[in-house]
Every structure is written in structure tokens, then in C-alpha cells.
Image (cartoon, rainbow, N blue to C red; front, side):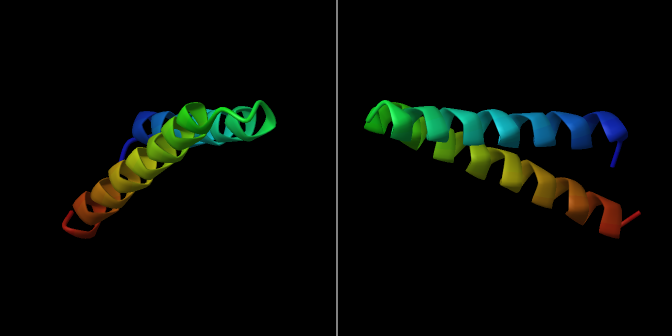
Length: 56
């Protein structure tokens, strides 16, 4: 896995955590859910990259 992909996935995860936190702080359920979704998407991308690495 390239370093770029790791950085992008980590950045997406951090952004999702920030969105989730801001949604909780402002009682915005939509933003909170969007943040959780962003984190899940980043986790899935990371898992896919790990699978690619396992087969190299």
C-alpha cells in the first residue's frame, strides 16, 4: 500500500471523527451520521489496501 493511500484514509477517518464530534456538539444527527459513515468508508478502504498488501 502506498503512503499516499494511508495518508488519505487516515485523513478521511479524522475528518469523519471531527464531523461526528461536531454533530454531537450541535445536536445535528445528520452530521453525526455522516461522520460515522465517513469513518466506516475509510476503514473499508484501509481493509482493502491491507488485502492487496497481503497478496503482494
